[in-house]
Length: 542
Image (cartoon, rainbow, N blue to C red):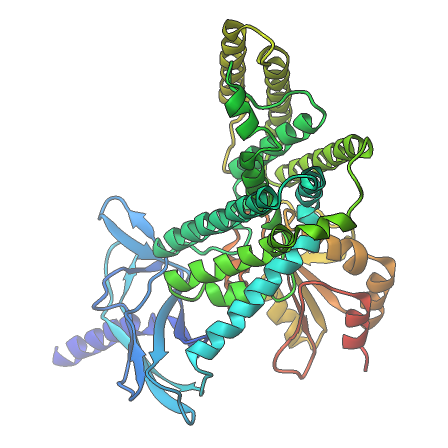
């Protein structure tokens, strides 16, 4: 009897302890990351005493509390649970520079529970990690601060912000005959619009990080509502350039002067538009700076985002302090109206580009409804422009404004309805692109194949430019084919946690990210944000 009991007990214990999680531990950018792969049918409950990372005390290194991702709530038990793959993070900081690498013992504690409610015994696994000497945090910070500024400066020549910058250039030409103080005020107001927009964007990033949400550069374009609102703003802005209407309050000429497109509010709004249009672009050095920023504290995120804004605003601030530079621009004349209208068409092109982004996020019926909303919005702008002008009676102006607002609100309520069940749709110009999965990548690598991975998004202007001019050209596609390169595409048009994890792995805050895995090489080749054909050709040479 005793033998049977012992045997039965042993079988139960073996069965319990056989169900363990697969854990990998690494050191990345002043943090220890434990990736826990939880078996199917099991989950981990958020109990910090049984689910955490512990590190032995090390002189001159301070470890923070374990950071947990956002789990899913069990409404019945009122608990937070994790399943599949979970990343735990243990940040650390240096009291002073390390003179040599340090080996540290890391313990990962967890307690798995079956989905039927029964929990297994708590378990622990120990790992040895190596913490390498790092440059001082101050040195790192200053390096990335400079990169953020230069990245923002380069954004001025990216195609995303061209429409707004061109219109701003026209306003500078118009202001060329005004006092230097006026020109300076307009430049600083434009810069204020940019800086405040980046501060607002940084605040959203910080809030989302505190909730455990993964966030990256251009993340707002993953939200269809944001794209629709931006699309609407660009449409209204374009219509104003064709003089369909001008912003004015009924009977208030002073307010009209202040808020017109040539007023200070116009300069401020130009700065906001510049930021909104800049975020789907990633400039050289900007990706690395943002990757560093997103891993830092709230104050560092804000400072680096301000640095990006300062770089974007810098050319116009210089003109504000040195207004004689305007003399190098064409003189005011009739050409300006023509140029303004050309910019209007360019903005309408931006509207089409944004509508194309929605194509990959919405269903066909939803897209048609957005077109009806755009028509209603245009009609409301026409009513406002025709009947809310200062030459009309005040009563007529107010009626026109009320009708316009009602029409916009009613059409939004009627047509803008978005379901959340549409899956990501990847449209490839060449059919030999495969959908990226870590498993598919590992399979190709195991077969000693060359693999090129493109992490992209339909809203990313830099990505689409690289695809059109480099990746999807016949020359490069034929090269890939001749070398037997497997092409994988990770789509981040809508929220994609797998892509987010890989971006973090290579310290990038957003797409694009290009990786080339070559057999017998431990690490992949990482390409810059702006690709050239020669880069690809050189990387595939024997």
